[in-house]
Length: 122
Image 1 (cartoon, rainbow, N blue to C red):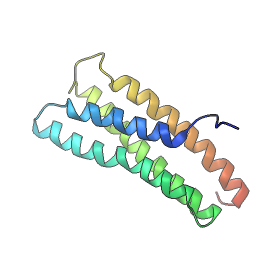
Image 2 (tube, rainbow, N blue to C red; image 1 turned 135 degrees about the vertical axis):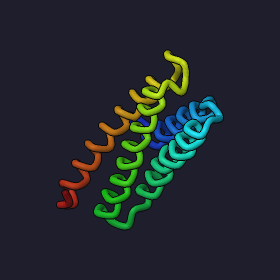
Image 3 (tube, one colour; image 1 turned 90 degrees about the vertical axis):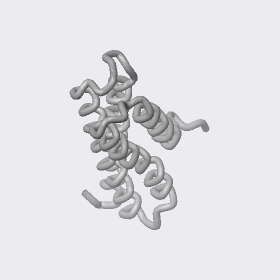
């Protein structure tokens, strides 16, 4: 039975998408700082999700998903900052990346709620 969606694949794709945005940021003090922060936050969720797949318990699974969620929210904030600072021309991939971040956040929130209920963790 095929998966409805491949969350690990989406997280990896999102990381690639955001890293490509970083490569287009201007080589200014702000551009470099935002780029560094964005790379750190966006590369964390795929790795933590992979760790969640090998979680030792449902509580551990929920904990690792919460880390993914935290990092995705940070990433979304940095992407919004890029947009508001107009570090890239309008109409670039930033808006699409923010939309993907929103979708991934919604998926993780739902997963955390479901897994938390099953493990009696909230």
